[in-house]
Amino acid sequence: MSKPSLKALREQQGISLVAMAAKAGCSPSFLSRLENGRNGETIDPELAKRVGLAYKCRIRLVAGKVAR
Image (cartoon, helix red, strand yellow):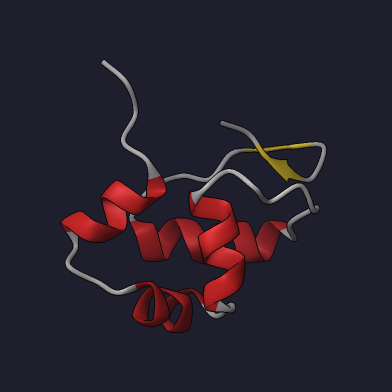
């Protein structure tokens, strides 16, 4: 069984990208890149924690980048 994508988790909660970004404390464009796997930049562990709480999942980091 595969893990649901971040976008699928957000849509299951019925939350828009803008609302999720506000909940996570980051920009909608950052979350869009993260949801689509285009975020090659390093992510602060505290931000990863906030994003995980907003999406109700655990965000795993490897060398400061989100691990899929």
